[in-house]
Length: 261
Image (cartoon, rainbow, N blue to C red; front, side, top):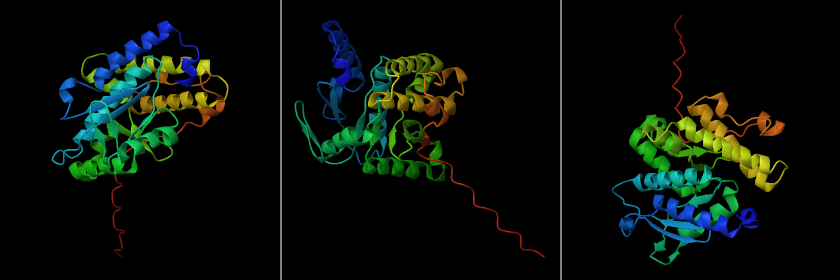
């Protein structure tokens, strides 16, 4: 945002406001007030508050994360990337104010830990997801929806897997996943070309490229969707950042050694 506003024109600002107004429908609907989700916005910041229903364990986090993923993906293919944090805990939110320790934790995650365009889960939030996955699926938690909702980064932090929105769109007959992921690739390649020299901004787009490549390799295995040299530098291309799913199959117990004579 700091970089973008330096050259923003009145027309560009108007375009951005119209885009955000349109995308905000993904995160907020008047009918949700008081029973599901509240949203407050300020400048380029968005705060969401979702009540946890003890009888629907995990569903609130799943629905919230799906909304965030859709919003983040739509924003990304328009050339705008965001980062954020998801936490659980006490919070107060009405039509004009939001405050509480959960908000503070989410802001700290966004400001000091996320760094690159990812929406991170707090330790307590990821424990919530792990408990929901194992509670519903047991040893087969790796088959749960949580493995599509979240991905684990190289630093061990779980984040919202927003590229899964492309697969969901294909399942809903909105369009082929490859088309949406090609759009994402084109935007990232253009950003890398804009910032070819080492910098904090370059690092953010390089991260998005590595995440894009890991996701496409896992789900589509299409070489044409990969972002490689010359868009990435030699080192960025040779040493890709590792990502992994939230749940992985547990190794089968080894057969007892045959001790017969």
